[in-house]
Image 1 (cartoon, rainbow, N blue to C red):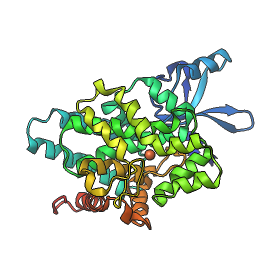
Image 2 (image 1 turned 180 degrees about the vertical axis):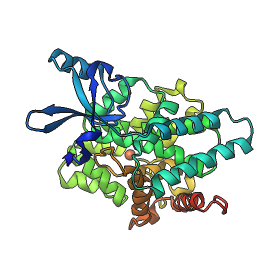
Image 3 (image 1 turned 180 degrees about the horizontal axis):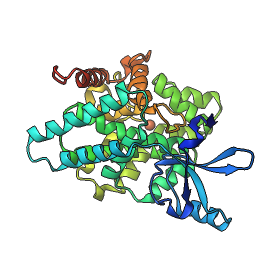
Image 4 (image 1 turned 90 degrees about the vertical axis):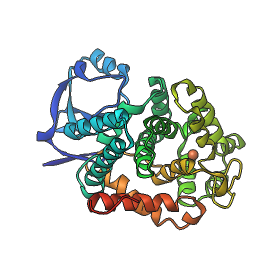
Amino acid sequence: MAVNINGIIFKEENLKKVLLSEIKTQTISRSHFFHSMPGGKYLSLLRAGDFVEPSFISHYLEKGMLSLYQLDMINEQDLSDYKQAWSSFKHAKTETEKLKRRDFILKKISNDYWLSDEKSFLTYVIATFEAFYIYPPRVLDHLQSESSLLYTRSLLISAVSSIAALINNYLDYNFIKDLYNTAFILDYGLVDFGNFNFVMSLACEAERNKPGSGLDVLKKYNRSEGEIAIFNNHPLISYERAQEQSEHFTYPEITKFIKFHHEKTDGSGFPKGYSYSALSDAEILLVFCDYLIPFQEHVFKAADGKLIVKDYFEDLKNLDDRYLLPISKMLNSWESCMNWAMNKEEDVA
Ligand SMILES: [Fe+2]
């Protein structure tokens, strides 16, 4: 019989018992972990995708618990394929070789997350995290402890940015790595002062659905001037946080993109009101990724890959005020690429 815990549906025979002492810490969990209680009930203690702090393990060991039940969310073969593919892309000597590796990754993405409705995107999230992530663990820890919503959203946006870069023919591994880390820290400014509350998440989601409306939400809920200032200035605050890590970037200039991720075609965006003509194609990659992923709690589970790569894409394509965002070209190339990967005869856009 299927069990449903917080939207994670599984059969008990798919659970594996694992010793607490064997769970890896200071990394992203590849599985959901449950405690089995008398009466056949399960309690979710750690979610797939969560950053595993050492204190999580030590707490339960001190309480006398020795083991948990584990539900794997990633496909080990796919993970190995993606890691191998990105490593080959990194070490490819010629442009022809790079294009071959790029095509392999994009075809696999299309098969796994555009066509298939079974696979979890967590596999690709972990493959890219292990390949690209540069920040100290405390950045992950801080983001997760202030807002699990923003934490999982950062994992998704950064993974998606690597796909968007490949689709748009960015073939420099170090550019893609820097873009990944720029995307990861895009909204870090929203938790800088510990102010990411429910209303702030409503404002961010409103802004995503109707560019320009985030501020209206904050005013409607009578939020303080300080909170409104954080919302307005978070691109600049996030940029400052990224700059603190600039020695880890090959091209630290890419972090400047963060400052422009809420600017719009007609110059009505924030914080500066630059117009589309002032933004480069590379900056627009980041805008596309930011608008693709909703501001909502994400639970990694089977089929969430198709939700992200196809369903969220369709939602963005059908956004009422999409004309305010400079992403039409990005949308076309994303769709062309996914269709190309399915129909291998045609050329990628
Ligand atoms: Fe933002």
